[in-house]
Length: 119
Image (cartoon, rainbow, N blue to C red; front, side, top):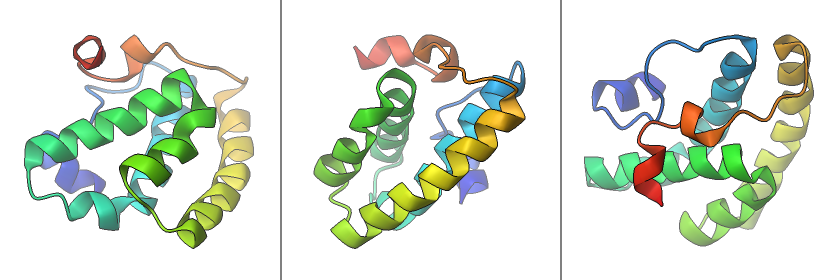
């Protein structure tokens, strides 16, 4: 799925990660995006899929606490899927933070391609 988004140029990151913290951020984003993939894949417009993926990226980078709201209100994910994703994220965040070597909240303009166009 992630490769398909890269191939159609809707994946919100460019180039290679600059370090372990960015690798962890991308890994976390991919966990979320793949969990939301059935909904994202149902969006027929490539441009709209790209916008949706960038929105997820922005929410994760700027205010992770609002991520559930975005998934619920924007993508209309079912409650059970949101609960399952929340559990998965709790497990994943600890593992990724350890791999990054520190807890790091990267700047959204560095992480998400075209972040300035989102404002």
